[in-house]
Image (cartoon, rainbow, N blue to C red; front, side, top):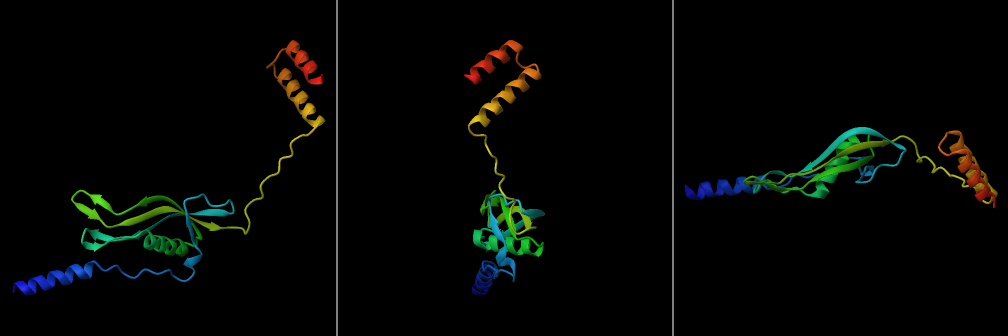
Length: 162
């Protein structure tokens, strides 16, 4: 009888400790997972989480980052997303008298709405005499807004024109 109970216990423990197969669903391989903000050619789809691991200590299976990434990619792809920005990573950890086997990734899913991000604006800085003209305009604006006196304006104007 003792042997039978021991075999049942071993069978239950080994059956629970086996992790299920996790694989990318077709199309989910295009989903990029990162901590960085997505480019501006993406729009927010909504929150998304990925999980791996189950149970407490030896009763379940230990989660991994790679399997949680696979899960979050599958979930994001099912929402029509192709980018996930990760905000929170919860690794397996001791919780009270139980070692929680769960690995969890939480973030926001995004979808690309146009092929290229917005171009970086090019700001032309004034060169040569344009610098002087800009300084004179700023000086006049300061005087017109009452931030400097007429005397301060004339003194600074003379300094700039030297």
